[in-house]
Structure formats: C-alpha cells, structure tokens
Amino acid sequence: MFLHNSGGYATLSFIPTLGTMILGLIAGRWLQRFPDTVDRVFHLLLAGIAGLALGWLLDATGVCPNVKRIWTPAWVLFSGGWCFLLLAAFCATVDHFGLKALAFPLIVVGMNSIAAYLMDWLFVGFIRGTLDTHLGARCFEWLGAGYAPLLRGFAVLAVLWLLLFWMYRRRLFLKI
Picture (tube, rainbow, N blue to C red):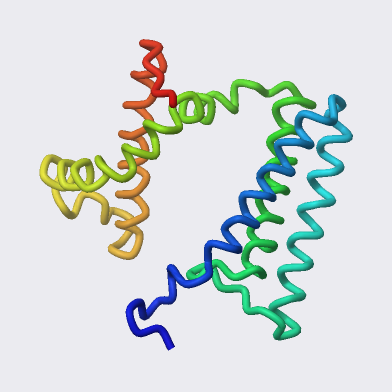
C-alpha cells in the first residue's frame, strides 16, 4: 500500500524508466552502426515486433501488467516496441524514400528540444488560457464538446511549434 502517493508514481518506477532509456540507446546505436537503410529498418522492425510481443506476453500471462501510469516493465517493452516501429517508419520514409520535407516539423522541434521541453512546462497553461480568452472558451467545441480538449491541444501545439520555428529561423538554439 502506498501511503504517501496513491498512484504509486515514485516507488520503483525509476528502474523501468532506465529500461526505456536503454532501448533509446540501442536504437541510437543501430542508427549509427548500420549505414544501409534496409539493415536499419529491418533491425528496428524486428525489435519493434519483439517489444510488442514481449510486452503483450508479460501482460497476457499475468507476469507483469501493462500499466503506463506506473511504467511497468511490460509497458516499457510494449511502448518501446511501438517506438522502434515508428522509428523504422521514419527511417524508411526519410532515408529510403527520400521524403525529407516530411521531417521538417520534427527537425524544428529537435533542434531546440530543451526549449520545447521548457515551453511545455512553462507556457502551455498561459497559451491555453490566452486562446480561450481571445477565441472564446467554446471555440474548440465545433466538433462537439468531447473533441474540445483535442482541438485545444492541437492549437496549443501549433503555437508552441510556431515559437520553435521562430527560434529556428533566427538560429536561436538552447544547448547544454
């Protein structure tokens, strides 16, 4: 029983979080190691399928539930599998098919990832409130009240991306 944190967030979830980081290191190493795009995509697809299967298997057999909220090991493998599959799709799209223009929005965010992280923590509430003030609180309900949070989130994301694009165009990059 968790007396001080009913969600169980800060218990031992740092161990699976390290597992997530290690999966990212593996993916990065494969991107460096395999110069051929087909090899990269093959390894990433294989890891993605394996991660999905292992995460599902741990949950289905009752060994470990697949719970994002407390970042269980089954979730690490399952979500890591999806990340490997998405990375394989991005590698195939950009490197193999040469559709580099599709990656431009991600390049803008990636060139200032620290700023993007800080903006998410510091600006989102202000941007959301400002959009509601100037556009009206019901502006985002045009698809129905159930979709308002999604549409408001897209609008906030667009404002954040435009701020990052402004920084990108002026070559303002936050670095450690």
